[in-house]
Image (cartoon, rainbow, N blue to C red; front, side, top):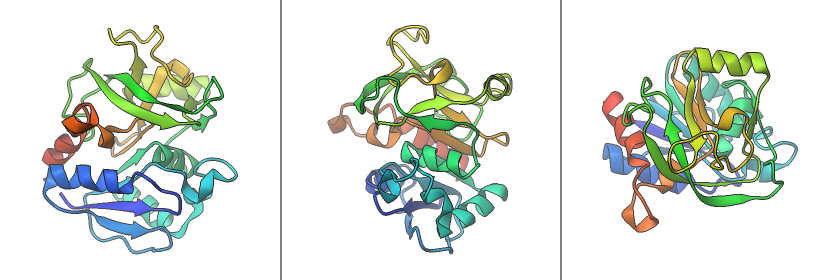
Length: 229
């Protein structure tokens, strides 16, 4: 699996993402600067977390218009897998690669803690390393993670099995107190129609080492490595 990680001014999880990808694939990703328009031939592009362009205007809005994202959009259209994590999810919605928007957390406070997620589908290269219904525990760290879309879009995501992850309580109940940001229908991650683009707010790249408190993020990266080998 050949990979690339996009780096913006303000990115802060690009090294974490690169480490996770290298651990799973055995190859160090190419690090691509936001002003570049040439991305090497890869199987997967990761848009990492952080505060691209200082989160001015709206989170991800400036990054979505950077030169590199035009190439990312072209590659995504050609079927290259794209993973957006946290700020990367915001960038993907702002660039139109995924529907909906990420708004301020319902509590209007930055949230940084470990949360439980329920894997809603294993039918994607990103989630094939898990079982549908499996509950995993990974960190979140965001101020604008409140996923919003109109009812028609939400119904379509549900009907097309495109909700990848949902915030839940430890027992897997989505109706409990596990939603850290007020996201509609407790949505934590979604897929595009072709299931080649995933955006999610939680950080699986920070849950691959036992010294960091857990390894539940490994399923994503090792599953991708197997799917894209």
